[in-house]
Amino acid sequence: MSERPARCRLVVLISGRGSNMLALADACARDLPADIVAVISNEPGAAGLASAAERGLKTEVVAHRKYPERATFDDALADTIDRYRPDLVVMAGFMRIVTPPFIKRYLGRMLNIHPSLLPDYPGLNTHARALADQRTRHGATVHFVTDTLDGGPRIAAASVTVVGTDDADTLAARVLEREHELLPSVVGWFATGRLTMRDELAWLDGQPLNTPFDLDADPAA
Picture 1 (cartoon, rainbow, N blue to C red):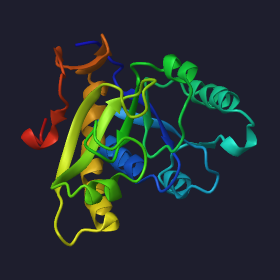
Picture 2 (cartoon, rainbow, N blue to C red):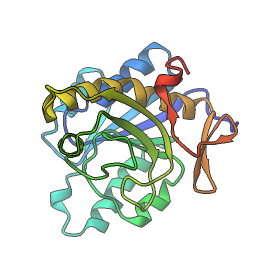
Picture 3 (cartoon, rainbow, N blue to C red):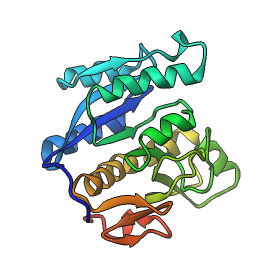
């Protein structure tokens, strides 16, 4: 296992409510050996910014609409992130596709949480797509970020049962509850040096994760 600082410095990227960011903040306040040093949003009106400020967290806005090109936005975002010297960048509902140079800058130390059981349903509208396909299981996945959209090395997943009365909203709400368990667990593994990325794979406790860790197999892991 690689060594980590006594407390891992986290920068969290959000675009909306920031509920996963808040779950992560709660975990940091309880027992996670990490601190959120900044919450950054591309949306000035993101509700999560106010929630973060209420928790005493530092917030920043890098509004993507002010930048005519994706690359210039990414440069500004990276400059803002780097001021906080993060050990880990966490995309927690960050609704922007970033460029390869940005990804390369944080490769192996940037995570994303996605609301599906990857590799199924990358991109948007995951819950409606799962229902349209009559899936019986659905969930969320945390992965390292690479150039492939929602296709980086998968680390861990958590699932729910799809029931006959589900619509996209009810299914999304149940999946979100699992996300709030899943993301702090994975960040904790990184913070304690259990989790790394190399050879285009996620490694946990020195073993390659050829398939994502099933959080339901050992919820206390």
